[in-house]
Image (cartoon, rainbow, N blue to C red; front, side):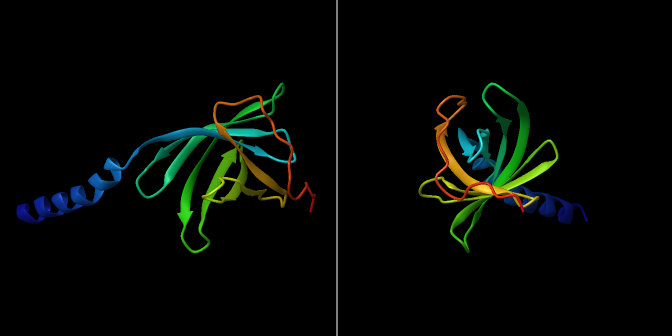
Length: 137
């Protein structure tokens, strides 16, 4: 029984170590939730098979709320699937891996352009939305 426990422990360790070896800080980046002023900035950490995102959602000169979420590659659609929560409001975005732009949407049906602003933290440099405008459904 002792050998079995040791073998199980070593097997689990061999599966866990690669995930931790790939873990680390990727970057701090920001996006605008166009057509709004809202800018979301996240400190993104690699977790081996996915990425965690911890940051904030803020509108310059107004509110600032904590935000957290996760990013996973979607090999079927060739996008990064990004889901995050801000004060119990759930958001999601499909991000193009080439441009880091995409479309955001929330659980109420609101949507818009998810515009990549670059490295953060970034409060200034808000850009105008280019794609679908806000539509209340």
